Length: 444
Image 1 (cartoon, rainbow, N blue to C red):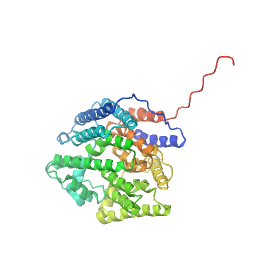
Image 2: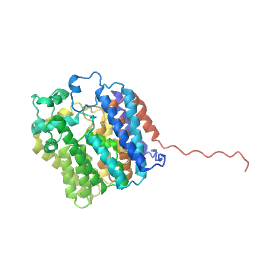
Image 3: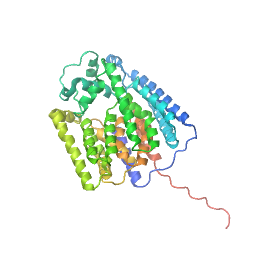
Image 4: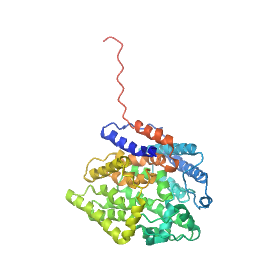
């Protein structure tokens, strides 16, 4: 288990390298190729990766019969040929990151963006595999409603009983009171388990498009192109349909409003926290432009207080118990405390209007690592509110997203990815000293 702390150590090491001025700024050299080469490559590689992950999900060993009956298989531990599958998955993700770097340097037209975006969305909605069980969990939350904060042992009916078999014990809802009406609305159109999963994916695709629309006014067009065509973003927030995309949309709306209506921005931060609690803190950097500072700090305090108060009114003590149960295995050791303290410090400095570090984006996922010493890949989006204010930080996060989330996928994490790949990535980030000029062998 100590190996699983390598990502935390790597994140701290990268921050230290940047603070010391040793982080590489060398540009990646890529061949000059037309836009369609890179966009076709992104769509094709995404389709290939989905096929690979489906193969992995269907070749778990041993495979329980009830898991084989799931309408959309879920990637799980114990994959056969795990080393080979992991290597191919990392190679695909690395190629996607390089393609995004290339597209960032080009100026694709709207038509050149539109068709691959549509293709990526279609592949995501119809994706034949899930990278986590969360989407099934969302259906569970919709079925139980507010009663899910204190669930009983009563089994779910029919095909929905597969969800009980996964959780094994009654599982409490771990999201805020705003989540219940949202997830019920997003799954209402589905009459079966599979239909609810697809209905939620379709709604997530709509939210993803809303995120892109909001980014249009907040980020350079180049960053918008990368976000629109990033297969990892599509996989995590449309195919896997993690509800972070909804919270991010709310936070981006706050960022878009902050200069015109700071009060509305602070209110939206509280709303994001009512959906998923960590965003009440993660979203605070988007109000760094509010002046004077006293007003900014008062607004942050009010947003946090409003999140706590409305959460208590909407969900009560049952939600507190649900969160306590979810975090019961939190280990307050130095290995977890250091990155968490560093993440809080980075957010505080950003709120105060101070320097934002590129590598601090890899500290933010620690806000979601409660039960296990793992940084789950979908938590990488936690860094987006922090990254928004600096284009180089946002670019770094977006183009790195495919490879970084591939490395952090727990089901495909291998000893060699922890002991070789992640340390190698940190070492490659070091700035190389310039070569000394050759000594002259001729007399002056």
